Image 1: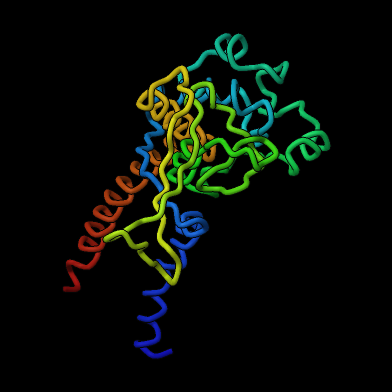
Image 2: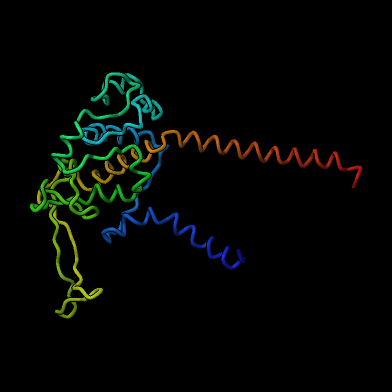
Length: 256
């Protein structure tokens, strides 16, 4: 392999690695909103866990995570049992649902996916934008639609918090004439709240951020410990390199 070909391959690798993260945005052309993720923020993680078990765990499981894993976000066993365990009897049980898959498929047209690693699959920005992009649509089976995931089978389970919105599609005009993009008339998509929820937009965005933060965390619950161990390993290797170099100089000082 020539140097030129090797450099070309190296240049392509970052694009290939980034493709899964970029693909969800490319599916609908919707610009994803950025969300700040901090898996060391235990208050945010606890808030996200509360939202998850109350609104998501009814249909979606997180079967790769056990309830006792939540001890790592500052909760006690009693707090977990009293406030978060609605579908299990033992704290060592996985976060599963009792909703039969056959019933779920008959109701929604598909089995709700397990959310254990959904943040690693879709990305935090995709989830954050998706959960804030529902709108009323009388043409769907559930009465809801989503700008990020059109015709999704999932209804808007957080509608009582965010409120009900409708989508408005208007043509983009310039001097009274429609603007063309890629051979088609350009449109401007906006959303209008027709029934407010129990939260204002700022509060709802914070709730969704905490929920996404929790979903990122359960995708790899031990990531914070792993990073801390990694820092100490690098520190130990640096010291070891210094000692090895000093030992080498001591052995070879008479030769050189």
